[in-house]
Image 1 (tube, rainbow, N blue to C red):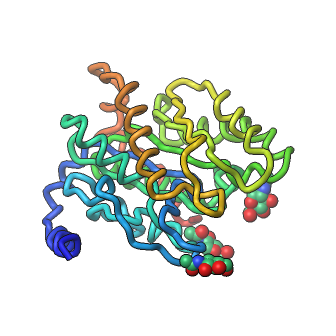
Image 2 (image 1 turned 135 degrees about the horizontal axis):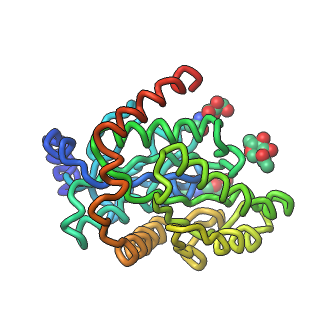
Length: 286
Ligand SMILES: *[C@@H]1O[C@H](CO)[C@@H](O)[C@H](O)[C@H]1NC(C)=O
Ligand SMILES: *[C@@H]1O[C@H](CO)[C@@H](O)[C@H](O)[C@H]1NC(C)=O
Ligand SMILES: *[C@@H]1O[C@H](CO)[C@@H](O)[C@H](O)[C@H]1NC(C)=O
């Protein structure tokens, strides 16, 4: 009952001042464990349990399907990963942890982009998922935020056959290089979650590919050993909370103060406008 009243009150929180103060943007992308299956029973219904670490916070917004900022609530990917039932993912626990531990972070904007069951080939440059990722990232930048990191949790679908598992590293590198180049943000941070599970037998091959990805500004968070649900594929709600904290540790530990004139200045004003103009050409093909 109290939780309900709290939610009701939060739904009346005026977030308009938060929107104008969005400072720190995180892109959440990948497949089901990013979109969140914590608390999803038999793939068909979510138990509705939201742990204290994942509760809404007026300083945490999310970019919805219509590219508007709204108060972030679980399930974060509800209107993005629409063909599956979404539950708790790592995003809210991550954001709450970052906001609590680093008051300088300001208002956080989360940009959910994960879609369940998608392999790395479906994220290649020019694909629907890739275009959506770019379009949503550009929209977040257009409202004045600065992207501090992309959190990437994907690869379970690339463990089905050895050939795809062996190609994962090359495909992931290409994806990262393309995304950084299309955003004109070559130093964009990427936090790579190393698989806890997979749909097929070649989990270790994909894990090795992820652990062996040593591009600049890529950091790893190893999810191996986190509790899985009865399907042996999806992280439980408790595991997602733990992962959120691990992601926050990785982000806060390694985040270095930006030099006085860095990409942050490039990513404001004229650059964003130029980027959006350039991007307008893409939109009709989406
Ligand atoms: C999930 O599905 C299995 C097999 O179909 C069934 O035995 C079980 O009762 C279901 N669990 C819930 C909580 O619905
Ligand atoms: C849902 O499924 C349809 C049909 O397969 C597909 O076209 C669409 O892209 C899917 N949407 C998402 C969000 O996965
Ligand atoms: C990736 O997923 C798509 C859609 O399910 C499928 O057509 C394709 O064969 C899969 N694998 C690769 C390597 O593209």
